[in-house]
Image 1 (tube, rainbow, N blue to C red):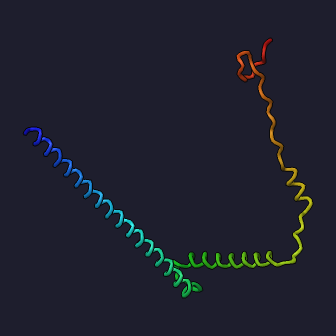
Image 2 (cartoon, rainbow, N blue to C red):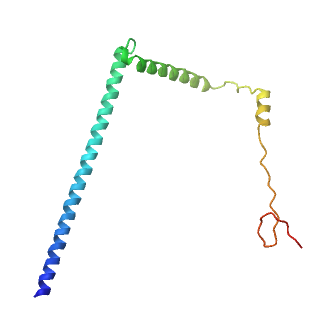
Image 3 (cartoon, one colour):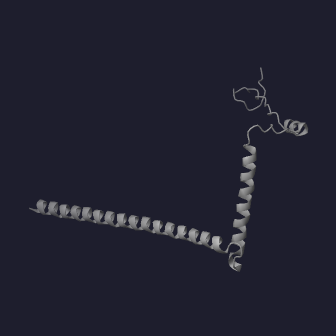
Length: 138
């Protein structure tokens, strides 16, 4: 009967380990769900911050309070740059515009800067058949 008791003890320990593993898996799954929920909440906070910034700029961007002045100026400057770029894009997309002229001097300078690849000579084989650079002695 000693064998049966040992077997029952091992079976109980295996069952306990399996239950502990299941409990650990459940805890880890809940932790993962909570972390995902936290990330979703942080994303919601970031979106709210952006919305607050857009509302503030819309209402106070022309005359912002001291702490907001630099940020509002960066936004205004970026919007102006975007508008300038969009105007230039529209000009470039006009059909029938002549091709831009290329200055001949610029083209020559570009060609002059091209560098020929360096050609290396293979070292001669030495007595042992390697290419260490020593000449073969006959």
